[in-house]
Image (tube, rainbow, N blue to C red; front, side):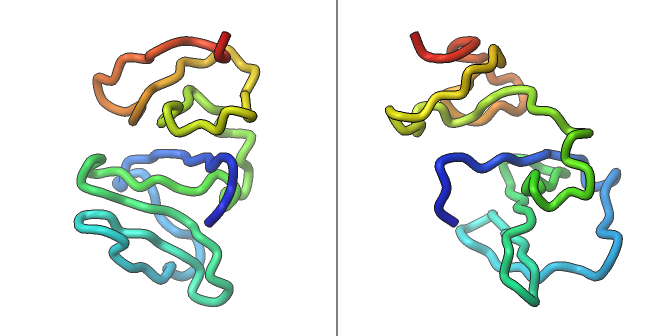
Length: 109
């Protein structure tokens, strides 16, 4: 996938199920499984050892993505210099899960 941003919704596996069928999957690196539509190839989700018991769904695959507003931005150290998001959510240098502390709140100054 090539995109300036990718948005995900992390959910507990116990609270999630596919409504129709099951996606195809492959292990992209040790401990990371990526799920995609077996018909068209669209990426759908990923799961990894870093987030045990969770699956991370591509926001655009949800029936009503507005139900899942963003809560922060992860991996901002990889952000392209010409791209900025103007909200005032916390920014994390790497992952936003667990006990991670934000490196800043809001856009770069």
